[in-house]
Length: 261
Image (cartoon, rainbow, N blue to C red; front, top):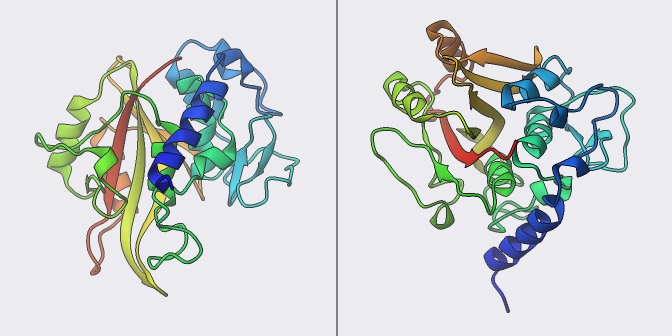
């Protein structure tokens, strides 16, 4: 019997082959106007999605319909995205792959299903950003010369660095270069039922080569929005919005992958 890790890798490889055949196969999200593939670069993709209202569980499917992760049969009348839905929608254009939502949700290690001892979907964000970058030349971006092998890690052991560590941020931001996109998953220790840790928020970071490094995500109050992390005020706002608690530090895992745009 093949292991779950090999099975998941095989399914993701098939999705890469079939979804990545042509960038033009990615449909325009319904109701948004001009398609990102007609634009020139990754920041244009961010601008295209910026301003879409936040909606719980909302995403764009491979047909361009606004729908729900948990209920893909539902078609939304108006555009709306949560953080995961935005990250998937933008990644289609970054990587030239028309992902099926079901592929982006794959439980890579079989450790976050309904009977998981850590709680269902505890590592959803971790799985999501790795599913989106599967098969690409990727790396975990860590501070101060640290390294990690993604294939030998999981959502508990690979969490990146503390969100409140400003020196780590400075070192990581210096590593970011144009031509790459950076997907992130934020995680925090929690105590709820049998949950110990939760990967609770995802988004993307794009350096533009013009003196800006844009973090873009979907938040409940602002919808899809972007901020320049090279502004100390903006970085402080991100840190303050994700505070440490008595349970331990919040952390951010950042994964670099090459743009196909």
